[in-house]
Image (cartoon, rainbow, N blue to C red; front, side, top):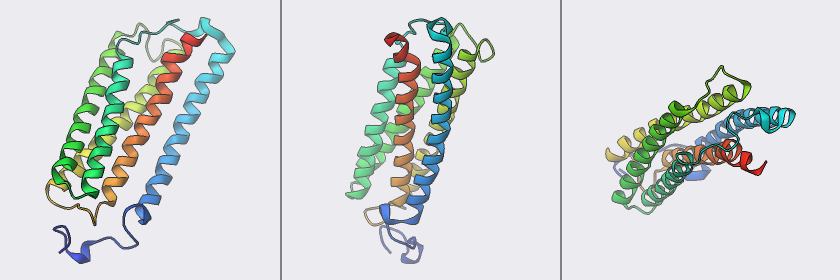
Length: 198
């Protein structure tokens, strides 16, 4: 037994970032990053063609989006803290980090839904509305998937499946969550910051 897991259950091909699953996860993340790159390029292309008159809100409100960005960034810190906990054998830190990240992810989703409900445009109202709801919607799906991944990892962690010598799934889940947060920074900059820059 190692960290409560039978030796035969340990994955083959290394541990941590040397495991083949880590590299597979990076390929998945690269594919997902390409999707967002194409979508954000579409926004930039149409915006350059139409200028500021294209925007339904010349200066979009940051009242919800800015604090929500802070919540998502804090969730990344929590995931990193939990990840460090499992590597260092600190079970309480590991479980707390994942739990806090899931809670912050849920807050992000709830605030995003409130913001959607306050928009005076819809998915079919214009090309801007279509891109806004498509891009933020795809991001929302990724956040929810990330929360499911973290919740699954939390359940397995409570069951004692992970520890300092067996934690590759935790690293993969953390990498996905950090990716989701980085994507939001690009989405936030595109929709909320660039209109202020003219």
